[in-house]
Image 1: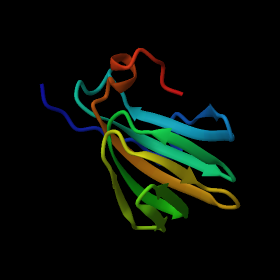
Image 2: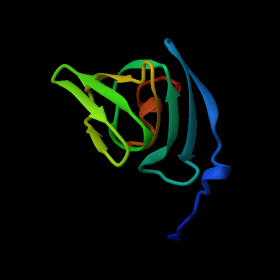
Image 3: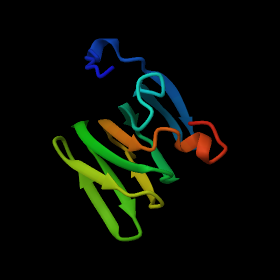
Image 4: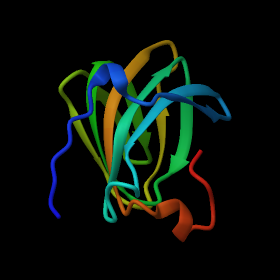
Length: 121
């Protein structure tokens, strides 16, 4: 049955997400218990640079602070209100070195980790 849900900012399930360069806070809100297609949530990074190759299509919406998304094509300076599109397979750095960034992310497919025989970081 179709439904709508509201997730209050104060109630988001933030948990530490350990990366090779530091720890971020991630609230995986849209999970497989809600959707079979797409995932989403909030992430907060501070003074961290995450090197990654996307295994999904991803959209970022910068809420507070800033970060640089660095790819082989160049640098994207991301500030509040900006939307970033990342296609599956792009190698990049989410660079928050010396800064803090809070952003919403949406990704497809939701089961990207399972499809790649891994667990979400």
